Image (tube, rainbow, N blue to C red; front, side):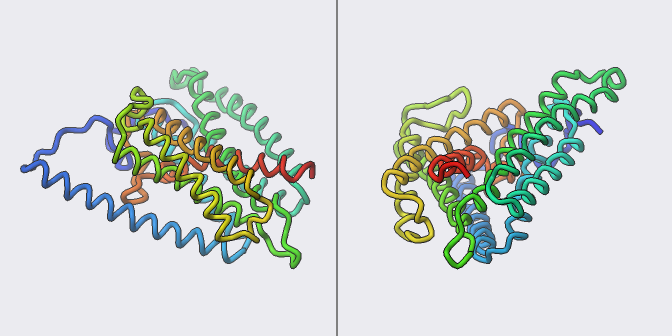
Length: 325
């Protein structure tokens, strides 16, 4: 099965260039719309945090697997849906099957094999499978529907690298961190830490940019992003980094003053880059949101865009901090 045909009736995407507001007065309608969006966003955010905290605190490996896999697969599905909306060719079914195998196999190795080596080896094998598989899949397509082969393979592979490969670092973080003396997992608290820092970066960029944003950062990618917002993102991420450690000094015992400073900066900047990276995708495919699954937020990919870039940074920072394992 191939994607690549635009779906004009797709309900999960909104064009970037919609019409103006027909109702009058415009100001009243706009204010009500903003309040509605804010309330929907607040409800969605609270519900998501409740689910996240419940899964992390429960400490059940199956819960970690289901949550990570569900969000990863939904994000990839939305990515291919954005391509379909624009009429860009892709092997959606092939990509989804590979992603499912990738999440399942990688989680098995991080749970049942000590250290990250076996999981890294499995992921390397899967990357080879991605390349070989998408090339083999193309053999049965090119010439049949006259779909450009290079674009189809490139879009499919980029989706696999962009969403499941990057998002899967979350599972690896959970089992990378040494267990407590009682044998309990501690890695989930580091996942909570980097999610809080990433989302505080998003919040800081939005609040600061809305209040004092004047100087456009990258208007050709995201007209609303400002350098003042970028400064707010970094400041909020630093606040979240030190604040999270202050609340959980024992659970985050591997991190100290300099670590909190460096990670606050790195994760804050990476979260902004992750948000801008998805903005490039949305602008290129002509959609406002990746989907409508999360009221007030958009799609799953809109939710996890910053995490795709911050999760690998925390993982490799911890790898270097802990040394060879």
